[in-house]
Length: 172
Image (cartoon, rainbow, N blue to C red):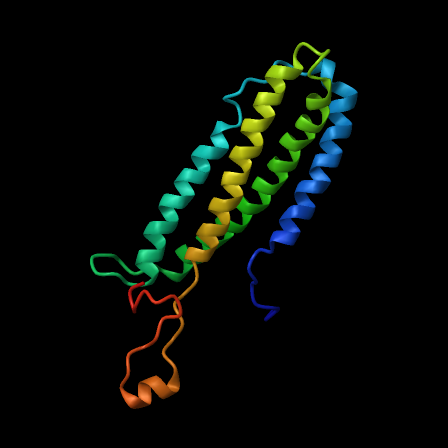
């Protein structure tokens, strides 16, 4: 059951998901808009709260993976579960970007003559921004799950410390 190693989430894949969901949601909203309940601006803010929690978790996890002083090392299963959460958040966030964008695609052209379009457009804008925050947080958490590169053979043989590509040193 070897399979391929897990790869980083690609922005191109997230963009395709968002575009596909936007098209489907626009079609559904076009058909059923009059039957929808009022959409309140605070509804999509739960995505922002999830994004904030993931950013905080990412900062803490990154410190633990890099074994900064005063932190407890991460168990591999915790890192794997966190990586699954990160990937799922990026995918769900992309889908929600598409959902809220589909609402915007329907409501913005109707601002002048549809009474509910103004409020629903603001809700759609908050939704797109909140969903983008979740995508970014998911990608950040995925980045934080990366293990630091092991020292090069040449560096260990010469007794030199490992060089970090980002210039932050061994505890970067």
